[in-house]
Amino acid sequence: MTTIKDIAKLAKVSPATVSNALNPNLARVVAPKTRRRIKAIAADLGYQPVHHQAKQPARSDCVLITTPPLEDEIEDQYWHHIRMGIYEGASQQNVNIQNVFRIQGGIYPKMVADYDGVIILGSLTESAIRQLKGYNSNIVVIDDVNTSCSFVDTIGTDLYSLTLEALKLIQKQANGPIAFIGGKRLEYHLDGSAEATTDDLRTKAYRDWLAVNDQPAILKLTSWDTEAGLSAINELLDETALPIGGIVVASDPIAIGVVKGLLEKRITPGKDLPLISFDNIGVASYLTPAITSFSLPKEVLGITAINQVCDLIANKRQWVARTTIPGYLGTGETYPIQVS
Image 1 (cartoon, rainbow, N blue to C red):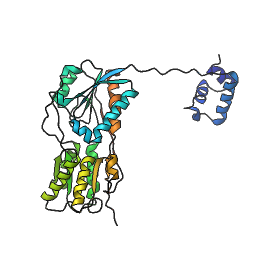
Image 2: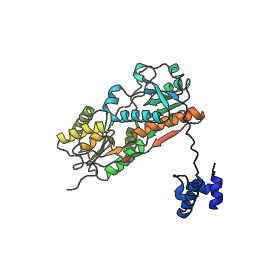
Image 3: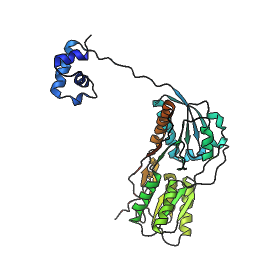
Image 4: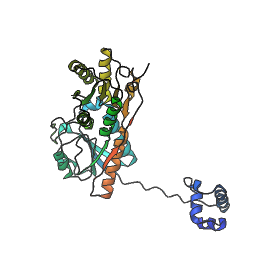
């Protein structure tokens, strides 16, 4: 049987060069003339490469704990696409999402003990996560509002810095104070009860920006749906004495309602004031005007969670990882202001 060493001897090159020349992924590192000579010799000698079958990773059984209420998952594509990413990653990594627990129904900590890993979607209290970790150390939390949670793996988006970027961009064009319309975030206990409303990173960034820029708060925190956005902008316009110079909205479903309310008041985003949102969902790009929105790596968050829980299962590491996946500003018509 012809070997790589036999070909190397006849071609007067090293075995490594032969290996590279015969590998479709590495052949480009070998000079074309040398590559052709090696392939010709290999063909003359009837060389047959040995194909090693990739080892299939052992199956891992995991549980998914979700905290967004069912109506939020239905209304907001953000959560839906993260779930899609989780299942896509699970398929790639031979992970079986054996069960899904919705926190509103309550969870006993011991319920996670029999699984290889746990993925938490959304925010639990620190006490709740510690209780779960007492029964299963392989835990990954996606989109946790509690950024001080230092004892468990977390995966999220750079929402804080993206919000500051949005405010900086709008500030350049705003002819008046900048408003923020966001959503209420809840942290849950294991019995399904909710802790007091907590600011998410977008709201925190806006509050910090206010302090630096000496601007009074023009702020509404509401539910994460379109009707709530419509109500919020109507209330803000009624309550604010000065004309609003620009608006940052925490998600596209809310922003759709905000844009509707502005248009009803004959205020056109992108013409009369700049507006930037988050999520970059498909329907927002088909509105008139199309909403300018930050694209968030929704599916990637889910896929990365699977990768990290597999790493925890396989390597039993004793340190935690905090993964931040960047977003980027998409195109739209509500920012920058269109000059006619």
